[in-house]
Amino acid sequence: MKLSKVSLLICIAAFIFSGISISISYGMNKNAQRMYEHPYTVSNNARAMRSRLWDMKSFSGILLTHDFQSKTDKESFFRARYDMQNEAIDTIRELYLGPASDVDALRSAMDTLITVQTKACSYADDHSADEIQNYMDMNVYPSMTKSATA
Image: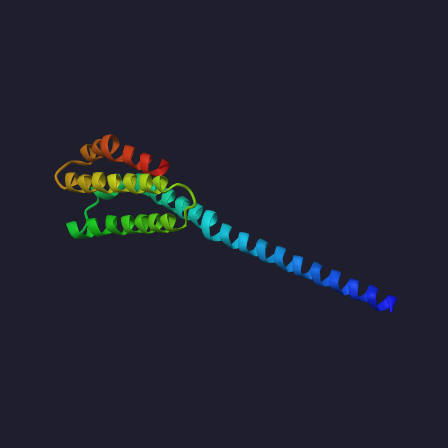
């Protein structure tokens, strides 16, 4: 009889140990999934946004002086870049665990950049390459820097 009580205690202890192990494993999986969905995804989107902004900063002056086939081609090129940025902001808004005001500031900085760069596209239609570059230095690039750090 004593052997069966000891065996029963060992089985109960093993069962409890298994339950605790399963619970801990589930918690670790849940935390890993949360990190993947939130900080990792948010930081990847933020990194991609920043990279696109630096690319735009490097090439937007050149692109504005480039002869597109039509004004619509130029606008659609920049619109495609803005759409990528706005999609990233939407993803960040959905997954960001920090204050909503951070994402609002990012959205505001992006909206300002879009407005400023749209004006630069119009400005570029009637000005020389040097004038466009000066305009970009004074009006557009500061907005890009602000967007990249927001």
